[in-house]
Image 1 (spheres, rainbow, N blue to C red):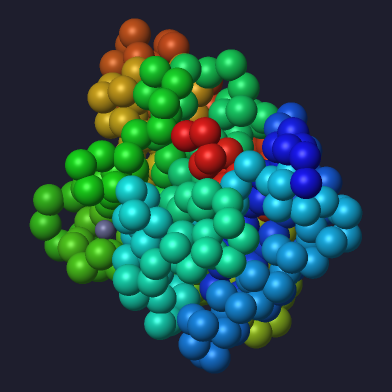
Image 2: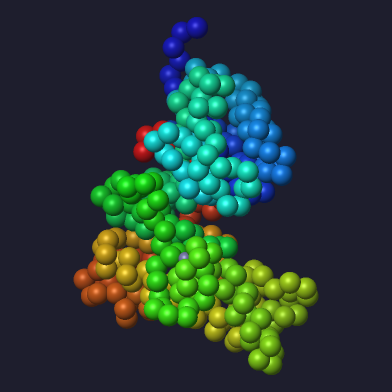
Length: 320
Ligand SMILES: [Zn+2]
């Protein structure tokens, strides 16, 4: 077979519930995509064979062979050994401990395979094709169940000494007695301002006797989505919650802005759907708390690529 131009890459975004696979061209456009269940409870071999099948299916659908594929990139929510393509630990995908995913998949398809953390993939996608286009120094954060980040400094992804750079959610906001964080420490930004913190605050207000819209919207379990919906309908308590959460995030970001002097902060993740209710207090806190030169240089924007950032960014790992 003659050497075909390697026009495409495959990006795989692995989540606790679903795995998204996409054939991506070099302009960052998704040509074909497929989603399969993760089903971590079946064991990692099951998930891997499902992913391999989904990758084959996507290529078949698009009528391309591995000759046209430059390589495959995987984004995982967890700690990754990027140099060796090993998933060290993925807390939301049970059983994924020290899994040499790059070796396994590379043997199957005969193309290079790269692996990195999912938030870093999102940062690469936003930098190249989304809200961060043109930036040289960019912080991409996702606010959901936790707070994660991907850092771009001088146009390059920052990975750190042990591939663990970017844990922005664990910036300390309090010396003693802060809320317990998932990392085991107290007083981290994530413990103050992620999705579970919103829910905890929302429940506190109800217990305190506040009448709020999100209580009737949620019916059963309160989630950040209902607090956001209530805010959109003018609910004072819901708006107050986002004001507090946004202020915490803005204060945390002010330390990062002072440290790295980025020109852009891109914010995504489910909680970012609150829009201005969240973004305005973030911007206000940054204006007040960041140092003047760094504060004046930075622009805070909403992520543009939504849930396609993961696969697009994973495909970009081949060159990053
Ligand atoms: Zn923490």
